[in-house]
View 1 (cartoon, rainbow, N blue to C red):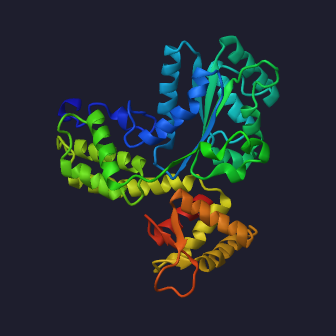
View 2: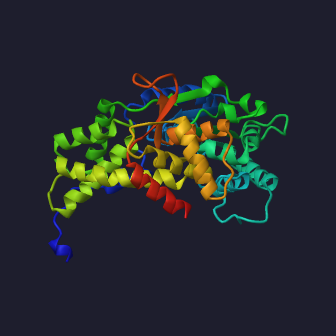
View 3: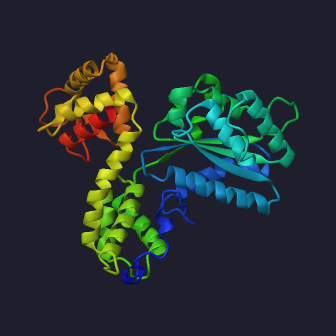
Length: 386
């Protein structure tokens, strides 16, 4: 059976995974330079630094944080300084104890996950860092999820970590990665350590930038001549609606797999079109899976109200949301909280909420579904609720 399978278009498919970090990040040189300037004192002055990386999905925040930390560790070694780093996904670990345990596990992989308080785990972490004479950079990915659920206290504890001794040198620096501007979610004590000038923004990629990113990944992942130029152009074009590099890379991988299924030998435009259809479905699934109950109920209302309409108003959406809540024995959130739900869904890229333009009387916010039909969205959300 294996003998009947033709040569794959891939030479290293792993370079298309979300976890892969390329040697150089295309079109993120400005953000990298800003991080280098901010964190220079960590190596040169035995200091600490904190930063916030913010931007929408697929704009390179996490990849930039990882690439920077890898380069920082290598640079510190050349200067004979001990610097290490670890990353915590706060959507998966969204409590204080889970975050601290993950950090402790970086040095003690078999550390028990029960039986120790946060204070005890932090004390153990301090001993590990002092014994190694090490400065640790902690990247909290999707930090807004942690802050929303657990509050800002853990941020304060980590930024003040190691200050108990008068002559102690800083042991921990923090990089918070978030789709939202998290300063409004921090208390005064935590905000004082995160200067607003330490905010690094990541804008959406343009079509030309996405073309360069896809070309880099194609060179890493595909055999020489493994994709038509027109196919890479099309990937950039269909991804430019969101400016999302993850989506572009996902389409490239799916297109390569379709090419392999046909023994085509190279990725063509028809493979890209087929991959786009598959990716639309999977990207919607991944967005919906992370929603909380009231976000799902709000989205169910939006889907129902959007049938046959290009857009709906927030009034339409809120009325439909109230009906969905009643069906599921939930008390609807107040108007201000509902507006927060709308902003969350817009940030996640599930819907688009923007000020009304020509053709709509008055100034209001209108809501549009992006990459799924109203009927299909209603079915998917209802399945999740059931």
